Image 1 (cartoon, chains in turn brown, green):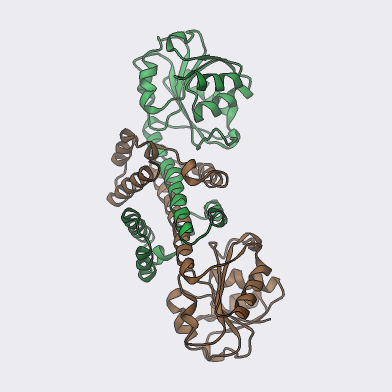
Image 2: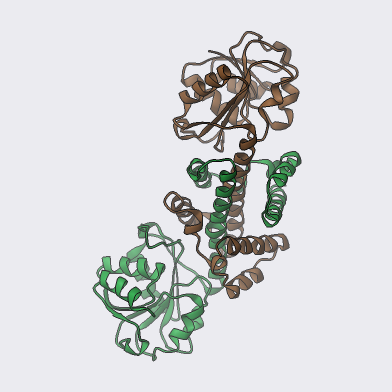
Amino acid sequence: MKVVCLGAGNVATHLIKGLYDKSFDIIQVYSRTQESASALAKEVDAVPVTDLKDIIDDADLYIFALKDSVLEGVASQIPSNNGLWIHTAGSVPMDVFSNYTTHYGVLYPFQTFSKSRPIDWKAVPVFTEGSDTKSHITIRSIASQLSEKVFDLSSGNRQYLHLTGVFACNFTNHMYALSEQFLKKAGLTFDVVLPLIDETAAKVHTLSPEEAQTGPAVRFDERIINHHLHLIEDEDVKRLYKLISEDIHKSNK
Amino acid sequence: MKVVCLGAGNVATHLIKGLYDKSFDIIQVYSRTQESASALAKEVDAVPVTDLKDIIDDADLYIFALKDSVLEGVASQIPSNNGLWIHTAGSVPMDVFSNYTTHYGVLYPFQTFSKSRPIDWKAVPVFTEGSDTKSHITIRSIASQLSEKVFDLSSGNRQYLHLTGVFACNFTNHMYALSEQFLKKAGLTFDVVLPLIDETAAKVHTLSPEEAQTGPAVRFDERIINHHLHLIEDEDVKRLYKLISEDIHKSNK
């Protein structure tokens, strides 16, 4: 399969390298900056492109791994062709492509990607959708070459999955960031909290989050809750502590 | 060392079993209920006790692994003796014992314990404090038989560590609980989010939480944020989403 990649960010990098490893033929990598386009293109023996006018029209697969805000803008500049167009975004409906081409769909990998960390693609759940049966079958087959966990998911349901990701990844990571601030107050470094972070994640492999919950909020131990509120200086973090504690208590009643 | 354990909950169970494995001589296990006292006592060849009047007065070590709210009440019912009294609570100052005996301190294991999950004691950071040098040396030595990560920490700093634990464990776990609700909306089961949860935890072993942050909040992508707020039905969860997103944006500016 001849592949054009639009985008050279974290998702594009991991996805295109994953496909390259599975012998996909990566022809072009587009990015606004020469530096990003070249960095990724070099790794997958492709040609770097910074002008959308240079995108070839006879590829089999066009992967739009771009920021949500620019996705449609880029799609609108690529002339309709016979290739399959897919995007990788959690919150963008498949139909973003409907005005611009005929065969399209979505391949949404539900994982957090950093350029500095390797990804075990086999374990990444990948959610697919297609504009027509043939397109969907092709997208499923591409996904299955990367991952052992491929699911069909509509655009409507994918938006809830994306919301899930914000809580399970971004918001969880912010709890870690706040932890780091309190450790500093105690004169301690972040590594002392890593065993607790790891065990908290490991627990929900065998218990539901509700069963796994412990601590002052679930017991609604007002003495400790008030003491903690007294320790927190930042008014927003205080509000956040209160709101999460109340919600934990409410959920476990 | 002859040990009396007051309490038979999660922390008591793991701590006493850990000490038993290191050849400590567990004499008595106290709990209000016969069932809990017996269950733990049986595992460590100790005598179950449900009446505080039956607690022996010549043990070397009295471990108070009790709920914060009952800790002082139980301590006040044990006659002063020559043994070393320690508690395991994050939020209770060491001086809770000062009116009741002479040698005392704290051994605070910074981990979340469930009876159903084994604990790798070697990797659990343990924070110690003692009322006098000899007591502190003894507590440090006990902790070192369990863990490779033993630290001194004052009561004042320990309260910030406990607050850290609430964010890194209880609040993180609540983010998992909310994730589960949104997955249900998407018709998906909790296991599809486990790779994301694991990678989010793994990332902060090599990146700081601030460096690891991604997603709509750090970019302050108002289109997605507003779309997510629109998807969330529960008003409290909506407020929580907004507050955490704002705090992420503020922290990463």
